[in-house]
Image 1: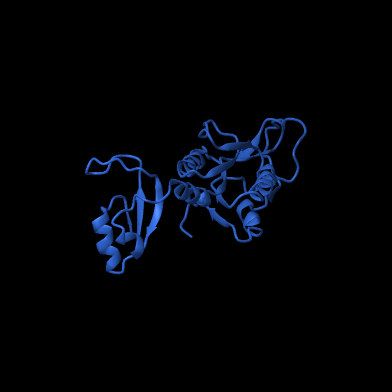
Image 2: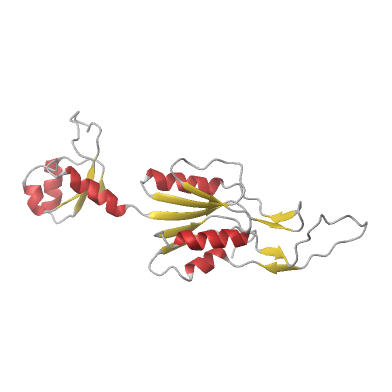
Length: 212
């Protein structure tokens, strides 16, 4: 059980009854007005409970625990663009706000954050390392390289699922008639990275117009 504040006598009673208690000691004042001297997590067992205090844990133990819990997380974010010609492209309506919110949340938990982002008009939180890309191919290539040094992946980007089979070197002129495009599927970024994840974790998001 996790509690923000438990007094020593309460902890002792819980532990003597067989409960395993995780106590968070924070650097602000407790409800009795006593300053908390440590900022760490400590597992209270029967022996320590008998000491009638949880304030004897060394501060460096808390620091080591926090360091051990830190992960390097890769977050893909924003849209990709697949150009038809030098001025036109296919894309998805992604703002990148979800990726930015996830990056901020991970940074608040002291994780290291790598963001691979398509073109967006937002600013990612300070502390996140951002790698800008444009196309789905660039997204996959950058993510593959960065993921090698990460502990997990959150796929929040909205990459284009299709690209033109041929990109025109000049702007496609209007002819007054219809225009046909030959499109081919792009590689699934999250699935490709998940196939080589090993013991690392992968979380993916998908936007659908129907429930599946």
